[in-house]
Amino acid sequence: MDNKVKIALVFGTRPEAIKMCPLVRTLKRSSCFEVITIVTAQHREMLDSVLELFEIKPDYDLNLMKPNQNLWDLSCDILQNVKKVLDKENPDLVLVHGDTTTAGMSALSTFYSRIKIGHVEAGLRTFDKDYPFPEEINRVMVDSVSDLMFCPTDKAVENLKNSGIKKGIYKTGNTVIDALLYVVNEKSADIDFIGLNPNLKTILLTSHRRENFGKPLENICNAIKELIEKYKDIQVVYPLHLNPNVRNTVMPILGGVERVKLIDPLDYAPFSTLMKKSHIILTDSGGIQEEAPALGVPVLVLRDETERPEAIKSGSVRLAGTNKDNIIKEVTELLTNKTHYENMSHANNPYGDGRACIYITDIIKKYFNL
Ligand code: UD1
Ligand code: UDP
Picture 1 (spheres, rainbow, N blue to C red):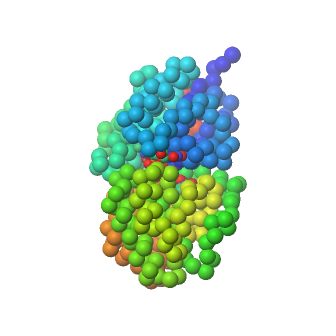
Picture 2: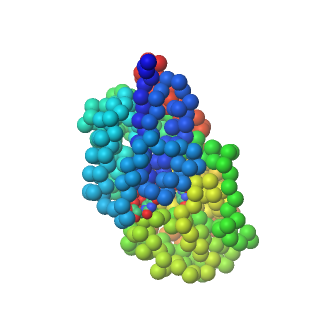
Picture 3: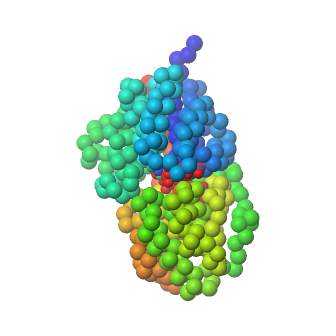
């Protein structure tokens, strides 16, 4: 007998894995569902470390990552290879996450197969097709073919309603908070191996966005270099994304600079500890903009816009852009103005209560009359 609803979750990059693994675990706990995990492996090492942390063994590993891959080949590979699994498994619902090529192409593949789609982290928008590129178009496309849209915030709900979508929109919070609480409470890790100086203030830097490659990333690195020269009580740690476009720009400017540590990407558990221990975070990452406010660490976003305005509104995140002088000005303000620092470092969390996976599971049960 099998009257269980069959749900396939598809993901492939580090942030999707961090935000989907808690949902895999929650769905698997329900006897109503048969759960299949499909990873595209758009990322390889950075995906595997998350799967290991959450103790998830995928049912299908498409193993698609190629060194320095391009959007065309990756898109075709995902579109075709996800179809093969869907043909074999014929799930009742496919869940995708966010705005990556994996999300966009898996949703399109599912739509062509006439299977229902649920979008986790739906409704984020900058309303500018070029920023972030190509993510803004991926998320618009995924929402337009979805039957269920799980929005992290009121703003995301509003974006979808304003775009004319009439049904299937739910506010659930972001599963990133579920993930963060899981690592902080159950998998906490120390970071002594990084070798940070406990007497210095730590500035954590991450930057990997396509639209920042080249000049913007050079500006960011040059800003760091000047700040390091000016303030002797700071150290910078930059876990470098494995994308070669990041390394090729960063290494020539920041390699060998005193009090700057360029390190490999960290596993999620030590990275969470590092975020918590940092004085300031500079990032163009989406996920970190959501996690750091919950940990009470001020964030300067290395972009001119964000699809995550909630934490800016509540005061813990500011847009610093990619202009060198502006980045220096924003960091200087945080280093020298105590009141400003305190105002930005009050923990607040506009992204959910850590139960997003439970809400999503309940909505799916209702959708299938379970
Ligand atoms: C992708 C997503 C981006 C997301 C980011 C998270 C798209 C278009 N971009 O960008 O939205 O913010 O992931 O990190 O979907 N690499 C490895 N090992 C890994 C991961 C990456 O070697 O584990 C290298 C490979 O050379 C790979 C390259 O990085 O070809 C780029 O990976 P890709 O997923 O295409 O782009 P990201 O910049 O990671
Ligand atoms: N992260 C990590 N190790 C690192 C850098 C980031 O585990 O060295 C985590 C981070 O906590 C967040 C996620 O990876 O949950 C963000 O991924 P990324 O910045 O690659 O993608 P984005 O969120 O921008 O799509």
